[in-house]
Amino acid sequence: MADLTTTYLGLKLDNPLVPSSSPLSKNLDSAKRLEDAGASAIVMSSLFEEKIIAEEQHALRFFHQQAIGHAEADSFHPQFEHSMGYQEQYLAHLSDLKAALQIPVIASLNGTSQGGWLDYAHSLQQAGADALELNIYHIAADVHEDSATVENRYLDILHTVKSQLDIPITLKLGVQFSSLVHFAKRLEMAGADGLVVFNRFYQPDIDLETLQVVPKLELSTSSESLLRIRWLAMLHGRVNLSLAATGGFHQAEDVVKALLAGADVVHLCSVLLERGPEHLAVILQDLEQWLTAYDYASVAQLKGSVSQQHAIDPSVYERANYVQVLDSYSSPSGVWR
Ligand SMILES: Cc1cc2nc3c(=O)[nH]c(=O)nc-3n(C[C@H](O)[C@H](O)[C@H](O)COP(=O)(O)O)c2cc1C
Image 1 (cartoon, helix red, strand yellow):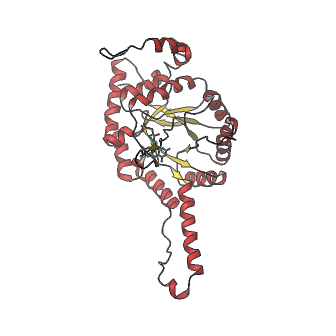
Image 2 (cartoon, protein in one colour):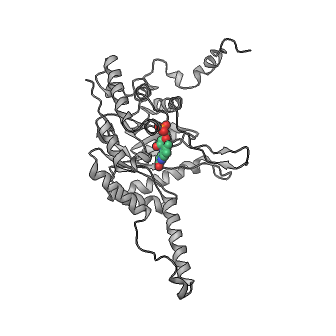
Image 3 (cartoon, helix red, strand yellow):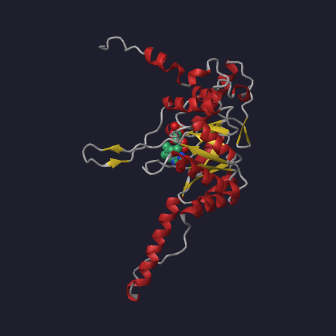
């Protein structure tokens, strides 16, 4: 039987299948089912600073209303008793996951302010997170902000968090960077332990009846994995960072390709939401069978063996084949040309 073990962010894992940040980590039962199906670690759904702030503002408005109200009317207001806030609940859930699971638990943080990133990261480490994923969701739409400023924001957040924490830190990136490999190198030099490639931003849609712009969440398909595979292949060997693939990994073949390109772990989300936590065991079994069928002794042997540095034709990952690919297209038979 092939050796499936891998190392990610310094954590020794039994295999490369790690459920990414999703609602499946929000309850103990589905998290336990993922572990039972063979997940080698789990990433929690993100702690959002926006939600903490919104909750604080809500509480402030409530107290303000009470302070200016009439004594008689006060008796009609509900009393503000201490109940666990969003952040407290998240931290309590992290402790519960740590107690219930044997596998490492990676916390995920989506901050908005510099101070917030640091304070919340601290509390996640204290609550027992084995590593921390920084989910920096920034859409660069400011006409006055150049790409260096955008990149520096990531570096500043990383620097702030890294200088105060002991656990490994990884960054979940979007794809829209002008010079991704160079930027990844800068993140490595600033102390990042890993990268998650790539966050999947949800595209708002325009409702043609109401002309409202509406948020739309659609689950991924396998075809989205190719973008990730290309960039993993270009990153592998050029940066000294743990690499995780996320976005469009639905079956063992997708996972094998990510590993061949250079991923250390492959995150699963949409496929598990569609098919349930137990489907992870199917992908794991198929992965094992693939390794045996193709005579691989271990995941380590596979990792990065078709990265750009090791591919038979490295230029395929870059522009070189662009013209040939376009020329190779032919319309399906029967379609008018
Ligand atoms: C319902 C849902 C909730 C998600 N919540 C988070 C989250 O809290 N934090 C985060 O970083 N990513 C979140 N993601 C993104 C996933 O972790 C994953 O990166 C993305 O869906 C791409 O992987 P997939 O193609 O396997 O779905 C969420 C995705 C879905 C579908």
